[in-house]
Length: 477
Image (cartoon, rainbow, N blue to C red):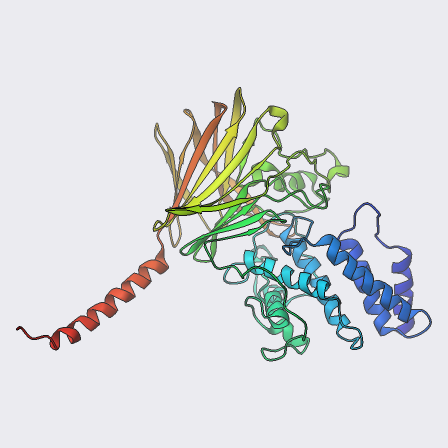
């Protein structure tokens, strides 16, 4: 067995997936594997290899991870894989007691866990943003549980509660189950003796912005809206990026109502590959049928996108009555059109208001798609002034869209992908029309805030139970 591992080490060294232009999870996987093998093996050159591969892992952390903790491939699925690789590196470094890991490495790894906690639902599930091929350094307890209990079409490869639990044990950040952490001897009372990441306060206020990754989260009662203005991954190469500029995901009571469509597959079905990364597959605007970033034709374009859609930073603000997030992109520059989206909350109202502004000139075809979660259905009505959609479920969600004259709408069959190679039927709301630009579309999303109603009912019940006792002690003068 040991000679076979040594041969494996020599083979990886001879075939490193390295480039002076860009590196990605492929090269990171190589060097984490080489570091692990060099720690296990003894003999000539192994001590030097440990130093080299450890330094390379720390260098890739600084290169591949933004200061806000996001992986630079612009994908939640690959963030999970890369974070697992770096976490494995940290746990391997722990075995070299005489040489603790660099503080900057530990700090950024902690930020990667904080990034996931910002995006995860209350049950530890992530939205499927960008590519996801279900890659793992090690299978998580969540993965094994789903393999045993769920049909393949019912799986979600981004249920990562146990990975979040590992981060909680390592850094005291967020929440999560402890099954995976237990494999490494980490419990609630045993923490890695390294400094916690230095960062802004954990999420929980009305909004959080991850400025380098281009992601914002707006919260309102029991609902949260995740807003995506991500730059194309790997400095514009876009190998795992989708055309999802200014798209969003809506959760109410921890469950997705409006979703990202996911990945589908890669090379075995080029039509499916391009369908799931297209602009029309995301909750954003499509102008004149033009992709935000050009999708190269043919198999050679499977892992490339154009880099036309430069995104602005997300502007965050608040004023009397609510707060907002705003961003724009230049993907329709060839058409002379700029798309800006603002998302607002209104204090005291269970609703979000989305304002889409199109700047430019001329008449253009406008398409607006909204992808429903797989367990949701809806009906749609239309009058002269607006299009209304009622999304069934608990709670029920209502949408009202006001836009240019002549805007039309329909509910259409669609597909979602929550695990690689799997597609499941769903519905989407498609709006379309032709309008003179500049123009504006306003979408109001509202719901019944069940948790607020329950709190109000509990308070009323408590007040009613207190009132008689108080009155018993009151006597007329």
